[in-house]
Image 1 (cartoon, rainbow, N blue to C red):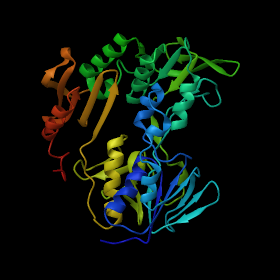
Image 2: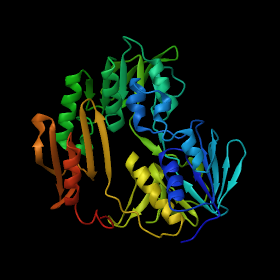
Image 3: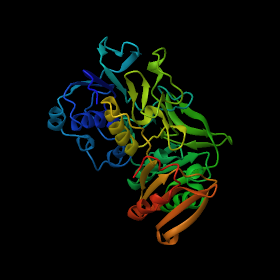
Length: 393
């Protein structure tokens, strides 16, 4: 194994912190610097759309580690100073404040930035949900009787709608799909999810794209649909996707195309690696570039990156996995689902709110979905096609 003299991690969220912890577990004793755009100590993002937004957690409860645990890592945390430029050849990162940080190995873990609607910037009552401050700002804008429209029928939008509905806020979920997550889950599971939301009081306005916002005197008043209809709103949450945070890498010498493009070792250039939502790496099992946006991958990929920084030279070949909690549904997904796949129920019964669905495509099992059956879904994970499982035990 090789030992770099210094390691710089750009990004102080789950992937960045997991990289540092893995380096220390693997015996690296050198200097580590963590550069974070936000002023907060590392915190977890999944609770933002659930416990933080719902008010059951304080911001401190979302912290990934207590301050003394972070101190024990022996790393320098430089927070509240976003990276603005990378010189990959010199392995130097420049920041907003004028710092120039150089290291033998640089790990890029800058995550995502939310997509926005035209005219959204500066309009009162319009929110995104990516950071802790976003969640707190949205929560502060809620009040009894305020009508909320969530724009986005994917995982994040559906979670936000479920959380807000659970707090008694009148909420409408808008998006182009026929049901929440229909493009991914297919008609069976997505239909059940739509029924769940509607049964709990979420107003569904699906099947029509959103074209923009209506406003009066600088505050949002509604959401415009491509059908021409306007959904009245006092508060709007825009949650229809995110893009890798790579703008600052323009001209750096690192290739960016829907993420930081990496080889199978998550290496983007000599001494430059990427981990988490921003990384698009060559998955040897699939023989394709893959980018995953979920908490589990952020941690697992960080461990792989730490090992390769130290010379382990191992490909990263995970079985894709994510989970989502909405109302009383705990949904766990292994592999890659598709709306066009053939779906069969292999355990449980959808009518009872507990089942495991197996997704088949091209004669091969490509994914497994567990609805309130996490253990059973994990057991069926082994049935996923061999190509996806290369390198896994």
